[in-house]
Length: 489
Image (cartoon, rainbow, N blue to C red):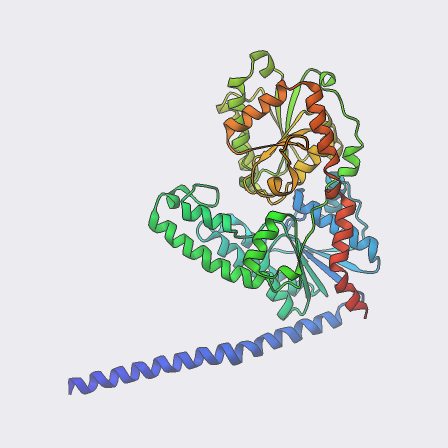
């Protein structure tokens, strides 16, 4: 009898399991497609009923008021479209709730020297906190990616564009705008969310800002994170390849995007816009005319990946290998901007670290300075310093070279692949990786004969024309032209 009841319970359980499986299959293959079709019709109706009858281009850039290299690309792209297609309406999705449109456009002109016409609309997003890394102490990549979908839904509900261009790399929004919003989708990707280098760091158990010490030192946690990264990479590759036009900013980014997204035929390498035309026209000031100061400049947002602590450790090492009278002339000028409260805390931590190293007399912090002051700083400086590992490109590196500085950049990513040449005869800068190496190179530059420094400056200035605003505008418009041609047809 007990056996009979046991068999009946097993049969009942199997039946229930079968019902659940059938329900899930129905949900996936019947209910979900119906919902997707319904949502798409709803957004199509919203597009038809909107007041704008001309083509609408929506730029997804939640941090458009940050003042970094990504924002320079955004405003250069907006300016290019306004010039070529004056009848097109441009909408920018932003999470900068505390900034009025007039303030955002004034900052674009002040920081980047782009005067944007006022025929532009801003759609303010209230869910930007869901893409902040601070929201996800664990599984940060997955959390931010899912958060970007939630933010994208708010953007789509607020305004439905014809053409959707993501200029920040939120690849998980592409299927949303393509399949549900019915938009043409393009992306300008500065940096892959996950790269083979990140996988390699986890596999080798290397400590970095993307691989914490507690994980790197534990083989089981490292193995689990490697599986997580590989699964995430598969999903990231699928959503990223949903874009019809993929633009990347460097050879390094192109290699990683082609590896993960596997769509090389629609991937285009377009170097970001750098203000080289104006900077190369600035007169070079001889080193002996610079008030007897040796100024080293870094232009970088106060983000963790920019690795400002390495700059301070470099200065600490430099002090031990130069003469005291030389050290008294050296100043490190950290120029940058803060995106949020976390960045402000990070900048204050750097000030405390400079005091800890007894460098506070030789280090200056300059936050959100106007473009005119940046030009003045570039003209007065001798060395440009860059310390980010696997920098995707490095706009500030190019601009320092154009202004006549001798750049010491991190020997990885875009700087090594596209910008810095170290071979004798064509050398336009230096590459380093560790604080001691940076310090030795900077001491070498300081002790060089002025003619040797000028030779490197001349080569560096001659090498940056391929990164100009004009080159970016031409290549960007050529790449996205099919969207506008098909719309007109």
